[in-house]
Length: 332
Image 1 (cartoon, helix red, strand yellow):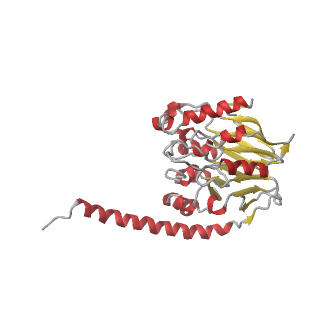
Image 2 (image 1 turned 45 degrees about the vertical axis):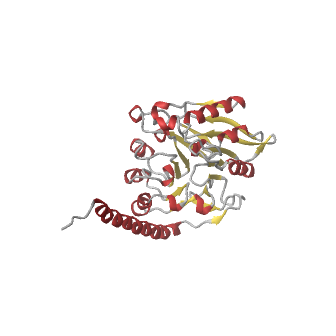
Image 3 (image 1 turned 90 degrees about the horizontal axis):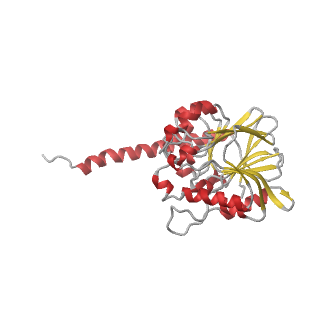
């Protein structure tokens, strides 16, 4: 009797696994849609009818760009992907123009310029800092100060330093800030007030035992608090980078979670979600690109609704004076 060959054995193993993942993905989407009814969206009107203490999650596909707004003050956390990603050989259209247009649509003017109290780069992956060059050098945008940790190539994998252009991105940002005489702060503070928000910063330095884990291990997490409500902007904090284990208990509960690493593999482990216990989750990505196991953790473990910025064309979370979080969408 002929024994089944290796390809047939592999097929019998792989096909059922793929079907199982597909079925689980459908289940999580169905349950996620049920949970989604906890929050109702209304189109964003920019009239600040729910107040002006707001977190703007811009739609930059699967990259991060977040604007903070409080009492007429504005700041930018990451910038979205730029137009010249060194990882792409072909021409690539990033989000520089979209982000700059949004700044000029939303931010208050001072002396004829759109003023940002500060900008901050969580780490040096291009999908987080790629548009900063265009933002910093725009003649109509005024930036009071900039927070960027000193780049440490020892933390990264070799391909990130050279093939992904992280060192190049860092050097360009420093050069741009110097040319505009913008204060560069590389010792990230523990916390400070920003309008009605209190901002706390995590992973302000470097963990020696995470050397070589990749640039995600350098991600700065920001906890935003107003009254009884909190949000965590988790940058690319992941399990494989080691940061979820390092920071979860230190950060503690947050009502809103901006999911780390766009909902990709390694994001939002059960142990991390147990520490954060979010009531609602925002993912800067397309819903279909969120990994099935991450969706499963959101819906089956955290039991929290999650919303992708792409399908909603951007999302604003307003922190009201009566301790609610109100979500509006269609920002662009």
